[in-house]
Image 1 (cartoon, each protein chain N blue to C red):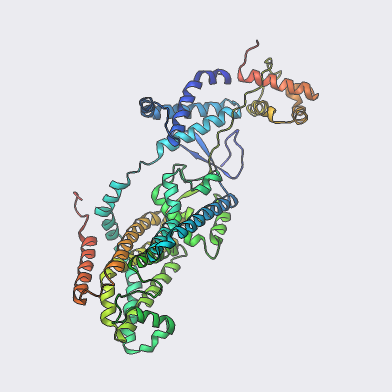
Image 2 (tube, rainbow over the protein chains, first blue to last red):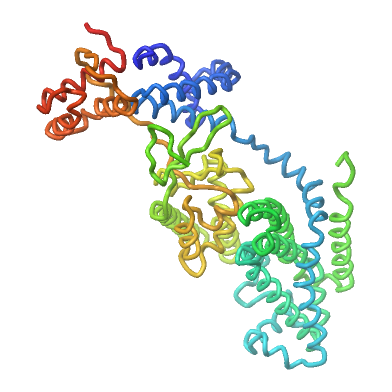
Length: 328
Length: 237
């Protein structure tokens, strides 16, 4: 068939197809929705016909214009038909109710490794500083340490506040901006053969341990531990989850197993992305607790400890129990 | 992989086979256009944050808290939001005519968008996308590390070509049978002749003497147009 006849025969069909594809990206003013729906229902068949026409046009040596036009239509149809439908609300709900805890349970070995890398140095520093208090100066400069001591001064009206940031809402901004950023960097650092993740986990473990150990030893124990107890469950777990996500990336590079490194990375990132969503969500909630609940001095430390323990139990129960069974 | 007949063997075009049995061409975007897109986005984000800062100063500490939260969102979620809800392109990419798609040419999926954008933290190292640039020139698809991990590529968006009709001329059957490549070349010539200067059009037409039977420019040009009219199937008036 000659090109002109081919165009004449199918031109109307192509125009309709192009209009429909255009209408998806632009506003639909002046378009007939009923007609659109009829075309939408018929799209798979129309798209296959366009593909056939494209193959014919290429094979018969038709001009570049018509081949390009059909190619553009095929690309548009491919995008329209193979896009995954997005239902953020129901998917988010399913993730929180089942997907996330299941994912965490299935990654328990990676998670254990990340927890060891983070809590190990943390606990080690706390214990060590009780016996060798001067060691803290290897990790934190005296100026910085004085600033930290001020934040947890038992005489302070609000705990955990730096002089520049003295309202709850400002601290909320600082926590969200800083903590979630650290989680993201911990994840991304996995791509450096896991070294970046190791660094962030060890460094943060050591730093937090140094602060905790020093303040405990210096007599600020009650103010410090009552401050951190509230948000510790969500925040520390969030960091460990981000670390586990990063370790997965690192392991995919170091030990890809039977996959190519590229395939192993993609597979690891799929699961890592889930862990990172969860970690970011937990840190987001933790920021609110840390900004609005933890600094309160009106609340007795015993109540704060109780709330902290309750949150740890809740987090543990969530990851151990939620999402089991078919109904979830 | 040998290029499909009739397609150019340019190394920045990747073909993907669809389940319908046709091949679609993706035109990959290189480091330069992507850097421009990033700079445009940087400028937009910077301006936006500056304006917001001026608006929020009167609110004092509360304003600073809000500003930090917005900054966090703009730093990490801005590209993700645009890639998922705005056709795979941030405003900068849109201006440069780029968009992000999955390796198989489908619109970028959510986890892939989140992954490739979080991994900017590594691509950016040691400064200004140093690692990302090295990764881009080391693989054939111009992928930075985030693209490798997420399985995405950045491509040029197809711009609809303005259809230019073959100029009318009395159709003339070729004296010798044309190969497929020859007939394509004749058609391409006829479609583009309007965009060429007359001198260049005649110079080009003088080359395929086997088809036109003459080296004389104006006559050869006319012959080629007649051939093209025959090829697309116009009938003599």
